[in-house]
Image (tube, rainbow, N blue to C red):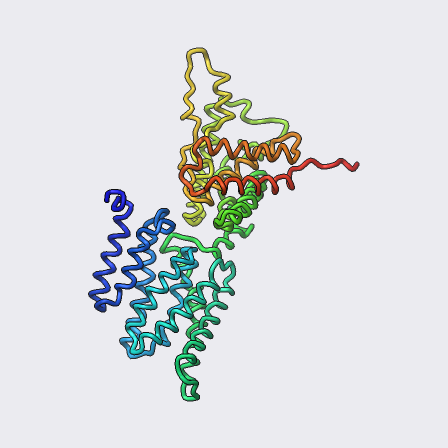
Length: 435
């Protein structure tokens, strides 16, 4: 029992209890279907193990749709006026999970249908349009796709209505209302999406693409002040995006996270090798302990810049976790070589503060960051050497425990290694001198 009802389950169970009593007070048993769905999601590991608070967000979306539908029905309006497809479209955009969006739709449609004079007809029309909208909006990267999904959902509502009753000229007004309902649902979804992203502290593919714009102030600063870091981040982004696609993770999120993971280097760009003059390394004149402080501090400075430029908190994880608690090996080795006879050099003092990556996306960015830097330093980057380097770096990260808190499997790691090797071989392979 202790394993089932541990502390991580208290919040979702509390939400379930609240929703049960809320539904009982508002409309007797109408909220029970949603209560049962929430109870299932409490123990649905893919949904709850990252952030249990997402169940509160899910309940919030349900309350909005339920209260809106309840208000329209109580005012004598037909269920054709209820913009039911807004909630599933928001659900799939905000949670990026088809199964959760379907459950949200099912609970919402059942509860709203019981408010209507013809429950089955209402439920059939609601559920058909919601399922269609979810499929069309899933992985959407353009605003036009959301509007198109709303319009098609409206057409599907009309078709469903015609299937359930005889086509009649006197029903033209209802047909027009149900068509406009779908189109407006798409437009309203786009309008309220930024608000829900802010309230729920999440990010969608649409807003991620806005962050990919090279005219963003942070990226502009990187181009001018730390061009080496900017170029490195672009390559890490491409590596991460492709690797995520290979293992079923969110490639767009990883790519944008990679673009911003090293923004802390903007504070002291000249101290990082990719921005330094080849003839001189500034760290040659510094003690290893001072160098490691400067290098490690780019995590803290990156978080400060992220807050200054109001970057979404989702990107903060990439800044914090892209080194995990890895060892700054180069300066640790220098400290060992230069230590006096009775002096001790603690390994813990040369490790990043962490935390370790806790999602596939942040873990892949950590690996891509490491292998890109290691491959770039090869003197004769043949395909075999690149493959050997990639596997060695990833294996070292695995042994060091940097992947312990994410969901990557050994099979995933093998796929990631193959993707990295293929892309890096195309970028850094030796070239024939034709001159």
